[in-house]
View 1 (cartoon, helix red, strand yellow):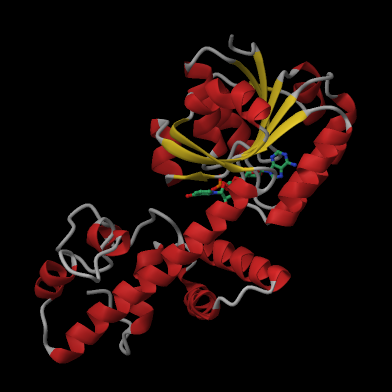
View 2: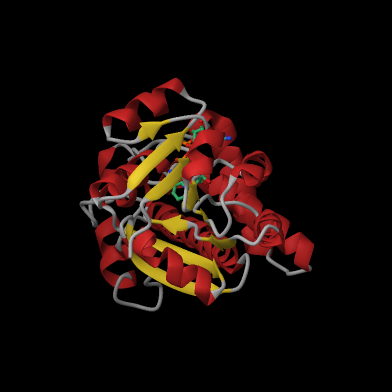
Amino acid sequence: MKPTTIAFLGLGNMGGPMAGNLVRSGYAVTGFDPSDEARAAASEAGIRIASAAEAATQAEVVVTMLPSGSHLLAALTDMLPALRSGTLLIDCSTIDVDSARAAHALAGERGHLSLDAPVSGGVGGARAATLTFMAGGSQEALDRGRSVLEAMGRRIVHCGGAGAGQAAKICNNMLLGISMIGVAEAFVLAEGLGLSHQALFDVASTSSGQCWSLTAYCPVPGPVPTSPANDGYKPGFAAALMLKDLRLAAEAATATGSRTPLGAAAAELYAAFVAAGEGGTDFSGIVRHLRDDGSAG
Ligand code: NAD
C-alpha cells in the first residue's frame, strides 16, 4: 500500500524532478528547500511547499536529497522531534559513509526505519525516473521504501546494512573517475602518436581496454555520438561533482586505511581541472586538461 504523505527536503537539480515523479505516481508530496528558485519550480510540479518542520510532522516517509552529510545531519536533528512514530527516512544524497551511519543511528534511536539510497543516473535519470538506487539499511526498511524508490528509478540494489549504499556509490565513482582519466590519457597518447580517435576506439572498445568511460561516454568527439564530448562537454555529470565523490572516496580510504593511490591521483587531477574554472564542465572534459594546449577537439 502506498504511503499517502511524503516529505521531500532538497528540491534542487536532482530532488526537484525526483519529487515531481513521486507526485506523478500519486503520492502527496510536501517539500522544503531554502532556495526560492527550487521552491518555485517544485510548486509548479505539484509539490506542496511548507516549512521543513511542517512537512516532517505530516510525513509517513521523508526523502532527503541534500548537498552533504552535514546538511543531512543538521536537517535530521531539526526534524526528528517533529516526526510521527514509525516514519521511514530515505536519504538519497551522496554523502560520507560516517554521516550516513550517524543518520541511521539518529533515526534508530527514535524508532524510525531508515535507508541510505544514493543514486546514479544524474539529472537525466532523475527526470526520466530511471535512477539506480544503491540502498543500505535493513530489509524491513527497504521493503517499506521500495514503492517510493520505484516511483523515482528503475533499479534498486540492496548493498547491505547502514551506509552500504554510500560505500557502493563512492567505490563506483572512484572507479569511474580513474577509468575516465585512463581513457582520456589513452586518447591523448594516441594523438601524440598520430593515431586517429576512431582507430583507437575501434580497437579498445572490442579489446581488453574496453570500459563504460570509453564505450558509453567517450571523452573525445566522434566515436560515441551521444557522449558530452559531442556537445561542448555540457554535463552530464559535472567535474565538480566528480571531485566531490573522489574526495569522499579519499576520506573513506584514509578512515579505513585502504590504499587507493590512483583514486588519490584522480582527485588531484580533478581538483586542478575544477580550480581552472571547469567545475561546471562534464567530467569527461578532463581530456582537455591532459592536453598541453588545453584545446577541446
Ligand atoms: P543541488 O545543489 O541542485 O540541490 C541541493 C538542494 O538542497 C539545494 O536546492 C539546496 O538549497 C537544498 N538544501 C540545502 N539545505 C537544505 C535543507 N536543510 N533543507 C532542504 N533543502 C536544503 O544539488 P543536486 O545536483 O540536486 O544534488 C543533490 C545530491 O545528489 C548531492 O548529494 C549530489 O552529490 C547527489 N547527486 C547529484 C547528481 C547530479 O548529477 N546532479 C548525480 C548523483 C548524485
